[in-house]
Length: 284
Image 1 (cartoon, rainbow, N blue to C red):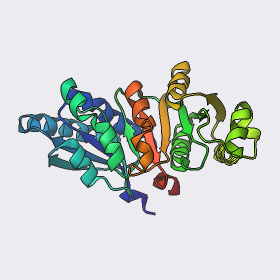
Image 2: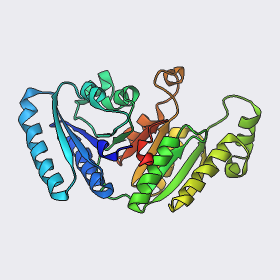
Image 3: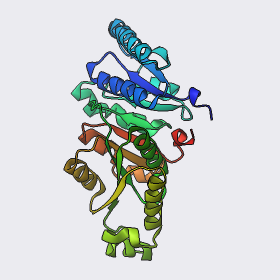
């Protein structure tokens, strides 16, 4: 794989709310030495000049940092432009709130949810920029679906000398079968079980150890969104990394919460979402 073809794909508009994600993405590129693609999106012709000014100022910073980059300037709706141009084999897509009026968000829903459903790349959503990366919370489902999220977190932790906390939330039992009963009965000691969840979680800890990444494990029981937010609020994490085990076309999304979106909308810090098969960064 040619890493020179890969890049951090920074999407922004002229809205001030989109700039923290832009600056965080540039900072991250400086830390891990990845090229940058700057995507300036002109949703309103009146903001074109502002978008061009932002591009000029960030290009200067990238040149001073020695980070290679390219610039794209596109007109259209942000969601459509990002989904059209983002390449699943090349890009980590970084963006933040696009400054939509509250009524529009209420009527149409948040752009983040729609992009997350439609795009096939890892996504880093940044509502506020905290320019440090020392403690990463990784939310694992325990069934191997979160492998990409696990690998992204370990890659970043290794590069940034950060520590990782692997979190597994045991939800109340929905279907009564032997493995589910064992997990419910022994949820506090799930790492010691021979369940698929226990095996995968132990494998994640072994991978961290092999890479020299400081990692610990936390397990919680209850509603998955509530418990993730509780863990995130209880410690000073710099990033939350989540895997998405289900396709947006799966029927589950019709009646279960969009966990990643709900967590992202409730937290201020960076949220990295990587679905199964999106771990190109790990193959460097």
